[in-house]
Length: 312
View (cartoon, rainbow, N blue to C red):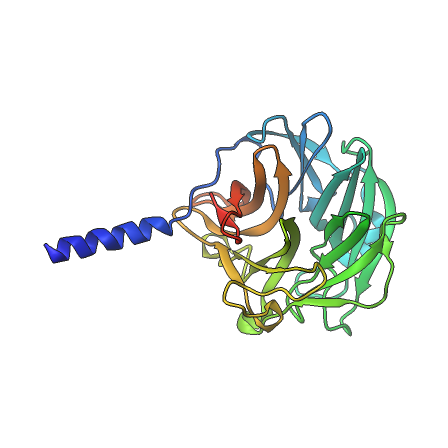
């Protein structure tokens, strides 16, 4: 009897820590490093890594339609960083405010610090409608950090950009809202780890209640069902530093509370973005399915009622 009771309790404990599967999505759901905005009409715009930056739209967050690319005529100003003509542009970040789509995106090559982050904006979000607002920040192989994976936090009248991948981790810098460009040459160090070669990237700062939450993807993406990507988080009372995990370990010392990892037929979830929608905070991410050779869109709600985000 005691054995049966122990097994039952073990099964119950395991079920309490099980991750829910992604919400159902249909249509064109291939997406690498997804970021999502919702305009005033209620239409969702999904931007993702690809040549010209791919755009998909949805009216219900379920059915997605491929719309085209952000730069249908190419983006030659990025060629010196992609080392090719009309190369893939990485990890866009979308913020919609006051009738404008604000897009930050990166240009680089794998493993290189010859990288740059650019800014664009549009009033419609449609392919070909974006204006090139130019270079925001760049790095070379002489730098100890990497200018990719941008994310914009608008907090009242303040704009703050986080970015970084591997090397010395995640950095932050204030922006001038009137230009969308940096307003300081001083970078804040937000997170760094030494395990697995310092593998962390895809930073997102999300404010909920009294805290700022810094979400990061740890470990290795882009390896199909062998991908080890996982989503981590820390929180702080400030957007510019002091992030710790739920054990009190600083993110600058390798801390990070696990939010989402490989489970069931969901491999290497990460490259995340967050959006506050009518039903609360929404986590968007990519993952590898059991079959196929492309990353697909994952969507789940987040519950912050415990003070820490839980995927539901």
